[in-house]
Picture 1 (cartoon, rainbow, N blue to C red):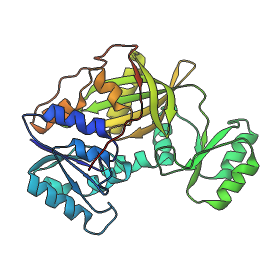
Picture 2 (picture 1 turned 90 degrees about the horizontal axis):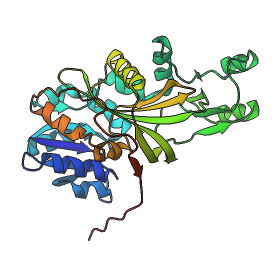
Picture 3 (picture 1 turned 60 degrees about the vertical axis):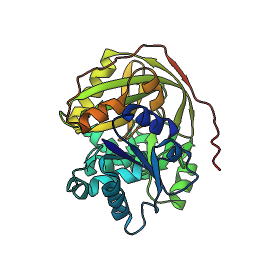
Length: 319
């Protein structure tokens, strides 16, 4: 039972957890485009591969799959999720399972405005969002939204190129110098992260771990504390099942005066996942079970509250 982790980067803990879980049963193979990506050295074996946008990239990955007798493959970066899903049939022909959601869902999750449209249409509380600044100004005039707001690329991740804006002059300036921007309502509340696993066979939500974010760094959770709320579990379960996600996903949510607002979805392992694993939510084991054809039992909220996570910097020396 062998698994391939693409674009491992600096996600050392995720690779380490897979190695621990698969020990004695199979190998963990990792890839990255750089030999300075420290996470690849946590794997049983690694490959340096071209950039994912390079011609023939998928063929390179398929060749690795054949050589290493891979059973399942996943990626740890957003753009590659869509690429994998789009080429799923090539992997399926080799008997390899893509651990992730459909191409349509990966694309919707990467495009924050499309995600907003879906959430709004299906009745989920979320941040008001605009691609047209004139529509935004009209809602400002009618007091449907107020400053400050966030201006960010509609497609993007890791909180890159996000600006908190307090006036129309700055809105005009940003829109004049960049395309593909959206305006998003500023949600002033407690930010929450959810690590969720949806069984690849049954399609059921089998594990949910939630944490209150205390401090953020570069778009990832730096410090957090675990908590439980059945109301939140029910919301996550309903949303995930209605949307149709599969495998591992990471959801950003805001608690505003006791009401939960869904912000973003990343259909992959989130940067704060180690908090869930160390608290007892081993989603690597759930993946292993699915690759072996085993349907996982539902175990939502199987962890203790008030477990704190604190990230710190480490170094990796390679000669």
